[in-house]
Image 1 (cartoon, rainbow, N blue to C red):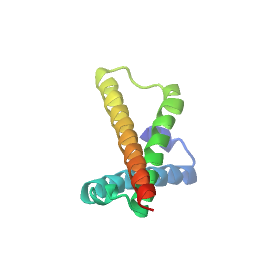
Image 2: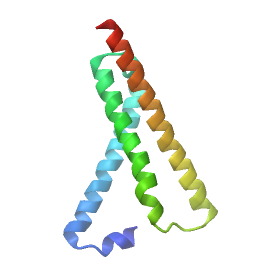
Image 3: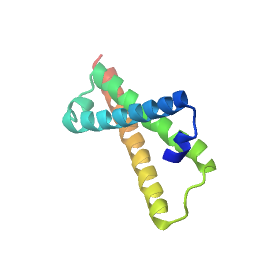
Image 4: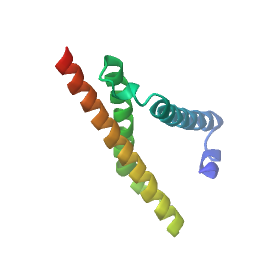
Length: 114
């Protein structure tokens, strides 16, 4: 991947690197929020709905993108890469399912109380 980025024009290299940093930052932030504020993510408040909805949409979008666009790329056939692909896809799907369920749970609770 690094060699592929080096083939781009300088501006496009910076755009690709910046985009990658945004993704890393979002993933890290969502993980931190999930660990440190777990009870707040399920308290059925308007903010819990907004945050779990945002995170669910992010992971659902990631899963769709993963299966819609990434199969066209050539990935090495070594077992370690196949194991990594399965593990990462499993994580992405589980994050999408967990946050979608949390979103629905929060939304249903909010609707009942308001």
